[in-house]
Image: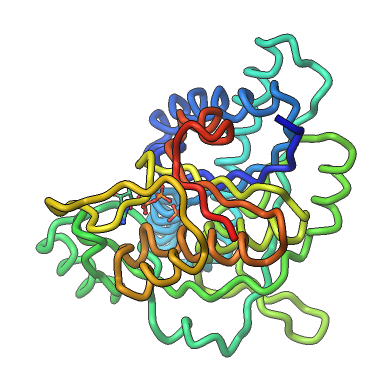
Length: 313
Ligand SMILES: Nc1ncnc2c1ncn2[C@@H]1O[C@H](COP(=O)(O)OP(=O)(O)O)[C@@H](O)[C@H]1O
Ligand SMILES: NC(=O)OP(=O)(O)O
């Protein structure tokens, strides 16, 4: 296969939920990514941060409750912290895996990435992004009354905090990311969807939100003129009638068909829907652009056309 430029969006299962889980998970994740680099592909990595940004926000809120001199930490700063902490583990795991395979001339770096959103995005009025741990209904009710958080059911998996998730409009550091990619580095960028900022004159003001990493990865892939957007998650393929008796796994999906399924409500909001929407957006943006949704461990087979759901024009 020709050498391709690939933006990989890593989902929650690539990172785990706790510090030790993340340390272990990134080793497996690094193998899947280095498989592609070893084949000569140019890889840019973006990742989620739902569990991590919730954990950081809770820890910082506890600190400010204990110490009146410590004001509460804005969500945008928590996203920045999550980028650094995940990037640190991921870039070290990638470096080690590259070196283990004798590839010592490809540097890996993490770009602290700000992503501009519109201050008047209606998403600020309708929290739709689940973050943090899954809780029971009782635990969620306690958190809601104690801290005023919006708590809702997350796709049948338990209750989580929901925060605003505006659409990404511009990647502020795209020039620096592009330069690093062009010089042959593996770049980790747009972590956690990017640090949400709004433009106020010349000032970039942090916004209280968490951007969806699938949408940010799509923008990153378009900006870098990538050939592939690969969204790695916990299922090998996208399905219609998911979880029902007549469930059908999809291998090859044209954008028009994907749009129709999305309109029919085949993909759960907050989980599979943003992935399919990002895949449709990328695949329809220019001739030759293809999106793939598959399991982390199947990235290499997916790009070889052996598995996953391919979304294309
Ligand atoms: N139509 C569908 N086809 C496949 N998986 C689906 C579908 N609808 C919902 N899902 C669920 O969406 C999950 C992926 O979303 P999520 O866990 O939020 O992703 P992430 O990997 O980004 O954390 C899958 O593991 C699956 O359980
Ligand atoms: N920011 C974001 O989309 O994170 P998750 O993928 O973990 O939900």
